[in-house]
Length: 168
Figure 1 (tube, one colour):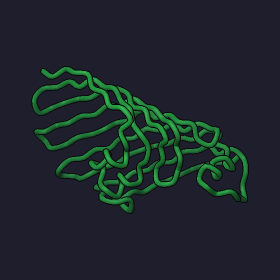
Figure 2 (cartoon, rainbow, N blue to C red):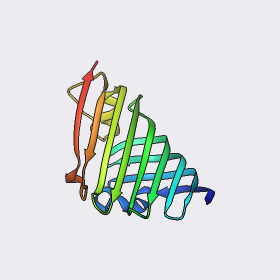
Figure 3 (tube, rainbow, N blue to C red):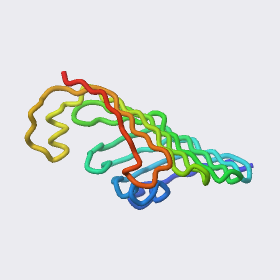
Figure 4 (tube, rainbow, N blue to C red):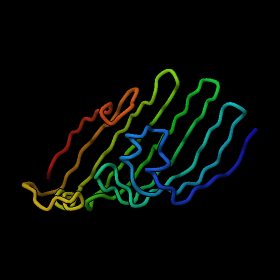
């Protein structure tokens, strides 16, 4: 039986997320630090721990710093893996961003992505400034839900999103 503690520090996301596909990986920027325990037997491993990101950006959206728990599984018998980030938290535009993301891959089904994001009282003008846009026709606090998912994802075009936001 395998039972060990592992850690990584300041790993560049754009270089280390190759397993998500080149098009997806090049959209990720920033640095990750993680600590986890790895357990399992021969062809089946499980990782449980925490991950923290700094200077994060997805495409051009600045996330800043974020943290989450992480649960990952590797099944060599079925040639499959999954990574679950159940409790992602960050501060964006003076408000809070919370999310959950599950990424799965198998040799039969390709890469699948399921994620849900909730924003609470994000200052719209401050967010636009962080995105590099200095003019806006709206102001106030944005709250709402965004879901991003995809099945058999090979490129960013294979990902869909739905959102429901309100401007207060």
